[in-house]
Image (cartoon, rainbow, N blue to C red; front, side, top):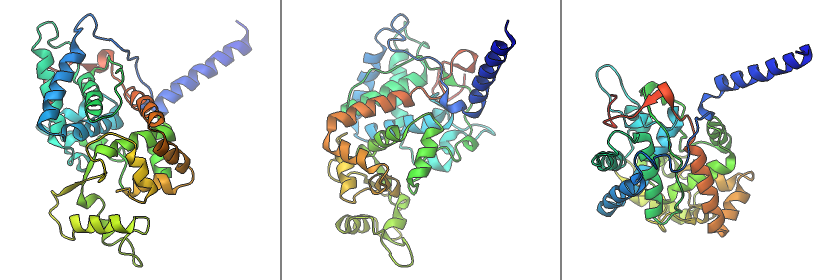
Length: 333
């Protein structure tokens, strides 16, 4: 073999290996549509029925399930490791401070869907919790008025879940655009992906403590963040007075809180983004054109959201001996 060609092949091989080491979160095994068409052909209908039943009981099902999926994928990939309960000496992901506000309805939705799937003899122990969470997220979005999309499947459930792994992996409500872009890029997601996924806040809710600094003690010169619309700030101060009960939560989109739509972007145009990390998407000139574009074009936003959440679902997928299918989503086999 020509020595120069051999050297070129060696360089390419080493580059690929290095990229896998430096950016493990961005790599993913192959997932595909209709993965269970032979082993559990009706799985999507089974999951959808379970999610619909839960959704009819409480709307919180939608934002709770969507957020659960996001928090799962961003820590060590979409492997349902966030579902694991702490036991013995192991403090699991769900008990990290950043995950304590995850609503129980999200976990319950996945557990109920898993029970429904396993109740079908042909499907028992054939479908992973990670895939059920991905399907349930799609269904929660669609039930709340968002786009319906085909979900890629084939994930296995992770074999570890440690609270220590959560630190620095999830976006914070005070992040600026650079911090948001950096965190999403670490998972192979672009700025546009980040802006689209942020719009899930259109059906979200937040505890007052997450934005209290914006309405009570923003700075020495301003008690209220000047970036907030004054009327909106007054509303927030009324709903979340100082020393409010830490369990109090409010809708992130006060206009259409139970509809997955592009009003999120219209709110940002008016200075009504609840978190600094929301409002910065409009205030920063690098992301403002995208916000304006999707505020004016719901169809374009929904297309971008489908592309972004599909890409998110490919992050850190486990296959082979790196995962398995749990019999109980909250415990390792």
